[in-house]
Structures are given as C-alpha cells and as structure tokens.
Length: 134
Image 1 (cartoon, rainbow, N blue to C red):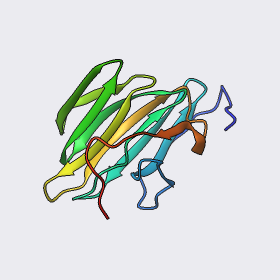
Image 2 (image 1 turned 90 degrees about the horizontal axis):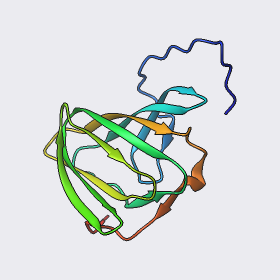
Image 3 (image 1 turned 90 degrees about the vertical axis):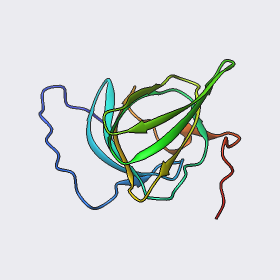
Image 4 (image 1 turned 45 degrees about the horizontal axis):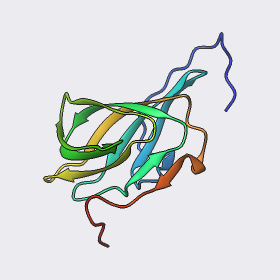
C-alpha cells in the first residue's frame, strides 16, 4: 500500500467485504495511513475464528455490537474476555488469539492495526483454544 501524506481519506461502511481475514472474519477497510490501518470486522452469529498470532503488527479492537468472547495468550498469560458493545481490548505483538460469537447476532467491531497490515503472510496459525468444527 502506498500513502500520500497530504491526502484526505473518507470511507462509508459498505456491504461488500474487502477481504476474509486469515482467522475467517469479514474485513472492510475503512482507512490507512503510514502508521496503521483501520478496519471494520464482522464475525457472523454462531461463528468462531481460527486461532492465529501476528508476525509484525499489534491491534486495538473496539466492539460495536453483538456478544462474544476473545481468548488471548502471551508469555504465560492467558485469558478469555467477554466482549459486547463498548468493550475495547488490545492484541499485543505475538499474542495468540481466537474469538467467537455468543447469541443470535453477529459480532461487529472496529480495529486499528499498527503498523499497516502487510498482507496475507502476517497471520500465523496456532493451536485453537476452542475446537473449530465445520
């Protein structure tokens, strides 16, 4: 991605998905700057992501709607955090994480990735906290 330091960006959340993340969630890119990217993420009702870790980026997530749980593990620390509207959390560099919806609504959140998302090879698959079934 190239960036123009003196340009403005404006985005409107659209139905179309820009990408399916390596963890399986739907990504809609909302903006990008040299220091990071900003995206809207949706995990459908009843869905569970794959567990991954990032090679070079860390993230901040803010939940807009739905209910779910996020598992995070790093350097011997491990926790499952309940999430709903208004919850914010961080995914520090190297954290193993997985998330799932609870209830009948999709889990929707926005996230900031720092530095900008470098591409498909960024996420590395790790052992699932919750078994993923088809």
